[in-house]
Image 1 (tube, helix red, strand yellow):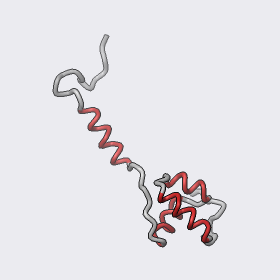
Image 2 (tube, rainbow, N blue to C red):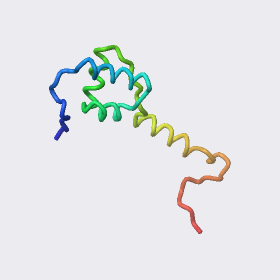
Image 3 (cartoon, rainbow, N blue to C red):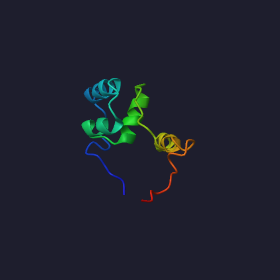
Image 4 (cartoon, rainbow, N blue to C red):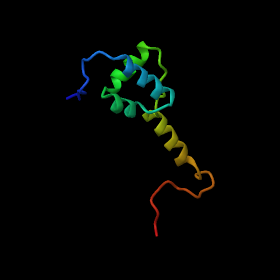
Length: 88
C-alpha cells in the first residue's frame, strides 16, 4: 500500500516551488523537503525536474555497500583483521 500525502493531487503553488528551490539550494535531504512540503519524494523529484531544480541526492544502497566493503578490507593484508569472530 502506498502512502498518500495531504497534498496528493493538488497543484503546486508558487510559494511551494520557491520553498523547494530554497531548500534544494541548501542541499536539504529529499526526505526533509518532502515532509516540509507535505509531498511525496516522487512528487518532489518530479517537480524539481520540471522546474530545472537540482536536488542533492543522498547516498544510495550501492554507495553504502561500497563504503562498508572498503571498511571491511582494512587490516586484512597485515593479518590484524581476520574478518571472523573473536575467540577468547
